Image (cartoon, rainbow, N blue to C red; front, side, top):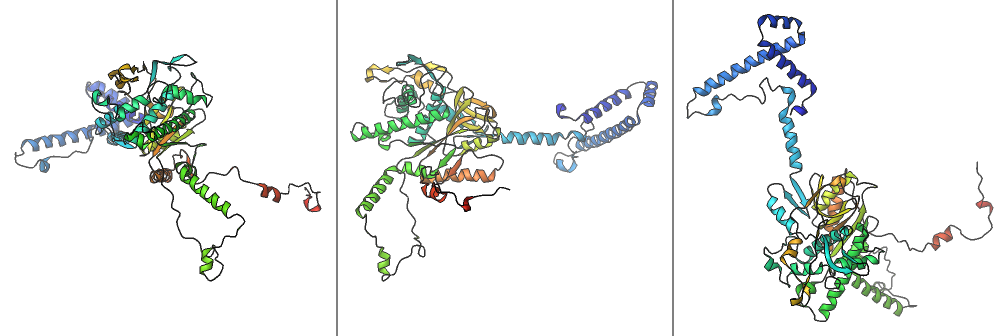
Length: 523
C-alpha cells in the first residue's frame, strides 16, 4: 500500500519518524533542533504525542477491563471497540479500507466467466469448468497423413491453423446438434472406442483421409477451398473457412440422406440428419433469407402450386366469394382487412449461422470487448473463429470483465491417425489418437490483442430459438449503450434486382428537345 500512498502522506510519515527519532536524543541537542525546527513540524509533533498518549491510555484501560472480566460475562459489554486504523501509525489519509474494497470489487468482476452459453464462477465451479474444457474437441496440426495430391503435402504445419480451428467449431456444433451442450465423452477409452457411439463417429469424420467417410478431413477442406481459389499452403481467413464449412455440411447431409434412402445405415445419427449452414454477409443477418433457406422445400411447393393456379386461370376474371355472399356488393379489402395470421411452416432442420466480421481496421477495436463477452453468454453460441495476427484459434469463452478470451490453440504438431486393416480399413481409434483430441491446457489471450477479423457462430434448433437470439441481442443493445453491436438483424434484405424503369420514365430519359420549363437560370 505504500505504492498507492499520496506524496503528502509520505511527507507526513517522514516528519513523524524524524520527530520520534529526535525525542530519544539528549536534551541539549533536542533544544537546538527544536529551535531550528519549523513551526509546522512543532505543531505536528505535539499533535502526534498527544494522540499517542491518548491511545496508550485507552489501550491500558482496555487491558485492565479485560483482566478483571468474569468468564461468564459478555465480552461485548466490556470490550472497547476502536475505530479502524485509529493508531497514530495509520493516519486517516491512507483510507486502506476503501482501497481494499476497490480491490475486492475488481476481483468480483473477474470472478466468473462465460463459456459457450454457461456461466462459471471462479473457485466454486473450477472443477466443473475444467471438466467441460477437457471434453471439448481439440484438432491440431497433423503430420504423416495421406499425401494431398498433386501438391505433395503430408503435413499442414504452418498454414492449416484456420482450418483446424474450423474443425473445432464444427465439432462443437455437431456435439450440440446430436447430443446437447451437457454431453461429455465416456470416462474410459474402451467405452469411447465403440463405433456406434457419437464419439467414434466424430473422430472418424475428422480423420485426415480423403473420401466421404472422413467428410470433415483436411483433404476435403482443401478440395472445398479450391472452389474459393484457395490452394494448399495458403492461409485461410474466417470468411473463407465459413464457406468451407457450409460446403462440407451440404455434402455430408446429401450423403446421409442417400445412405438412409438406400438402407445402408439406420442409426439414430444418420436418420436425424444434419443442420443447414447459412453465412451472413456484410455484417448483417436478414431474417427473410433465413426463412427461405430453412423452409426451402415448402417454399418451392407453394411457389409451384401458385404458379400452376396462375397458369390455369390466365386471362380469366377471379371472382371473390365474399362479394357473392354480400348479395353482389363489391368487397373492398381496404375497408375489410384480413385479420387472419399467416402460419409459418416449421423448420425442416436446425440452423448453424456464421457471421464473418471485421471489428477494426488494423487492430481489434477494444470497445467490442463487452459485446464479445455477451456473445459467449448466449445459449446459441458455439464459439468464434479468430486469433492473433497470422495465428488462428477457436475461442469458446471470455472473462466477465472482457479482458481475457479463452480458446484452443491448434499450433501443435501431432501424428495423424491410421486405418485398421482388421476392421476393413476403418479408422483405428487408438488410445493415443483419442488422447490427442483433448487439450489439458487451453489458451488465455488478452482480448484487446486479437485479430480484428473473426467469425461468430450460432446454433439455433428452431425458429423460437432464433427469435430468442434476436431478443437477447436487442436487449443487450438497449441495456449497454457503451458497447457497440456486433452485427445488425434486419427483417428483409434489400432488393437489388428491382425494376426501376418506371422511375427512369418519371425522370425523363427521352431525347425530347429541351423546353423553356427545362431551362434554369443560375444567379
